[in-house]
Amino acid sequence: MRLLHTMLPISNPERTLGFYLNALSMRLLRKNDYPEEKFTRYFVGYDNESDGAVLEFTHTWEMPPSAALKFGHIGIEVENAALACERAVQNFGVVLAPPHKPRSTVLAFVADPDGHVIEFVEKKRSDS
Image (cartoon, rainbow, N blue to C red):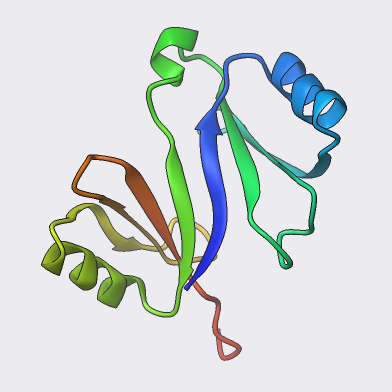
């Protein structure tokens, strides 16, 4: 397993990115717009995503700021998302979304015993 990112919801991308890029000297690593789902993801950090953990900021376009700030997660790369979910449940976790493939990667979401959300991102295999 490898820590990939911590996702934090944001209400104002310009203000948030300005803080992390200018005050903390991070770099914008990538930006992904999802017009159909009406949100944008920004990945920032000191190292490239392949070299270290980063922050993922998600801006939901039409959600009121107070609602948008109530979700977040820790992203962890795993070899097998189904097995990671089984291990989580065996250790008092709860599966929130079983393994599924919304785009090119298998994802699953679990909650730890305190309710913190963890996203399992299945490592891409060379044969896929």
